[in-house]
Image 1 (cartoon, rainbow, N blue to C red):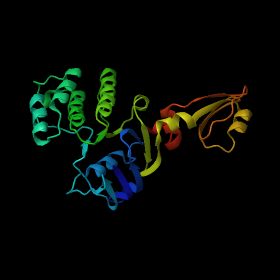
Image 2 (cartoon, rainbow, N blue to C red):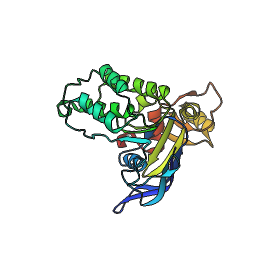
Image 3 (cartoon, rainbow, N blue to C red):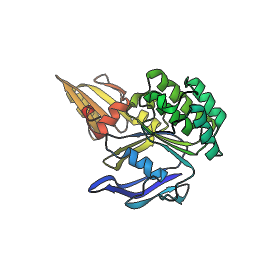
Image 4 (cartoon, rainbow, N blue to C red):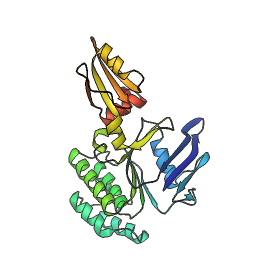
Length: 281
């Protein structure tokens, strides 16, 4: 569906993508994580054909993506993107006019669930409601691939919960590939099928969420037993407090013991362990 073959994208002397290779071959919800400036938005723009690579190639459904040959299958929603300043009801109708696969009934139903006032002009909406209008157009587009850049930015907790529910419903009703970038890690963890982590334009990790559940965990206890239990394993971080040690592991599970405690590792702690400290997020 989407394939990056050794893609580099430079802006002057800065490499936003650096020899990046990755493929999304299954439908589902992909969580795209990375620190600020890691290349998340660049990845989405390349897949949508909004920009072209400096080197390498991007393919969607087997066809090479180029700036003047944007893939019809993909719909990209950039954080903070603006829409025509018309009433929302007209905005949805315009979307239906230019896109035969647009599901107007679905868009109107989503607008009702989010309590969007269809008689309001776009510029009169709050920041969060503007983002919601753009996202609803994407969810209703009928496209096989949705690229959502920080879609819940500006949403309150209730809006975010409803959004994630609708995202899962949309994928279940009509299987598609959805890539969602976000900094609200704990929430996307509950709905994502797969995880992509990038750093400095390079792929750090791509796997299913089930693998994270199985292989990411913490070992906590007196320092010496914890060190012995985790010797030879991939330790992605640790903290010390007095004579106690907490190690964060991404590897096979250690054997249970009464000398230490083994517990699951949340996605946020896992991400921080792989790419940096919490202060960098």
